[in-house]
Length: 227
Length: 227
DNA sequence: CAAGTGTTTTAGTCATATCTAAATTATTAT
DNA sequence: ATAATAATTTAGATATGACTAAAACACTTG
Ligand SMILES: [Mn+2]
Ligand SMILES: [Mn+2]
Ligand SMILES: [Mn+2]
Ligand SMILES: [Mn+2]
Image (cartoon, rainbow over all chains, first blue to last red; front, side, top):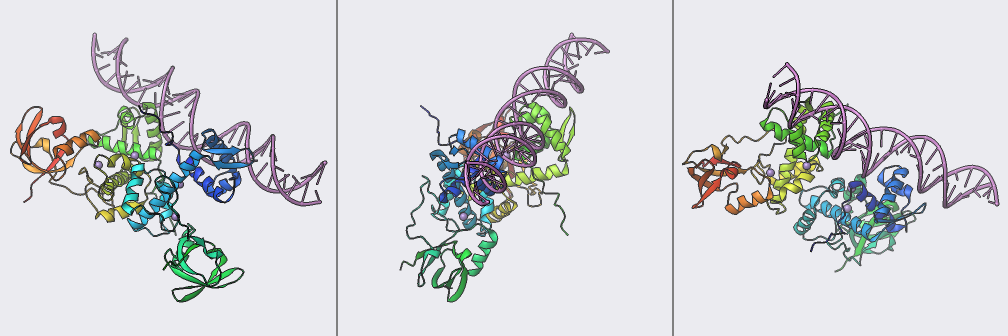
């Protein structure tokens, strides 16, 4: 007896991108608003309203008029599936095809919607089932559970004297990524906090002291050196 | 001064697939008809008419009412670009990700429309700029010229006594591909023609004689053993 | 060469995803 | 609490690419 696999809905590229942005926005806030989604997706607010109504009808989001949306269980699964595709693709493009870490995002943004589950599985195997992408972002496993990285903390939360290793650079802006790379602020690099001011952090990286503006420091995640 | 790159039109997946099928049909015939295109693309004839009118307005095909279509220069370039994507993808999926030769077509059929020129170039480099895909089909080079394979001939055109090597298996039907594989009739295999009847060919392959129905033999291309 | 048959095109409809402009609802400030 | 402002939704339009049904055209056959 063959039953429908309700977990495998066929979603359009647009629908998947909406779910992904709702996912990102609701990492911080309880609900994703129409305006915020319109900004992230580069469409008009009216377009967002129409789409989230449809996603609501499809059971992928919980939508409250004039309030905003949150993902349902099936919507979350779809978003995580897409995120896994995205981050595996970024890692594969980097490791197998020599893409720079500033190049991977754009290509993955498109391909994430069109690769099969077979492609996903073969990439994961080729890469040895990685738990982070080239920027250090965590990759959900094949059951869509996030890998545990309990030691991961924000650089910004640390006091003078902290020594540790960068594990994640939280941006996908190409210029910003190139800046981080130029400074050697990449996953794996070790650094220590020398001094903290209101709007910057003085850090030591490879013997060199840098003054790191809050706007950049904010985007770094670190782990204490485990020797 | 920056000029538009007229060679890089933005085409939809549907438009690209129409161009590709027009390309295949006009390999044999001077014009591709509405009915034939509808069959190949799995759409209604009326849908084909509307689309080829649009492709005509876009300058991608030469369309004669009630006669059929042929590719223009720019349409041919677009079709060959897509064909290069398809066959490089098939080769890459096979070589890099371990796809079976019966699995590559379906995945490539979708991804061909969504990979970037960068992705194309990196795959080609990774593979060492191959001139054939896993089925032996020729891969247009980066200038969209076909590789020269002057020794390639159809098995069916040969007389008793011919000895040579299979270079191409001209089908993308999964069951048929598996049959060929099962029989050892894959690119690289050597065989000789023992006997020819009206509707079959008796061939020797790895010491084993086979009776090869015309319907299968027709799909094989060979080269004389060059010792 | 006039019918009849089959192919091709036209016309009208639908689904998707976008837009702008107008109406509605919610929030903020007086 | 009311009025102004901002966010959201509705309404109506557009583009794409498909469909069906009907009309137009082109072959083939008597
Ligand atoms: Mn995307
Ligand atoms: Mn990333
Ligand atoms: Mn295709
Ligand atoms: Mn092939």
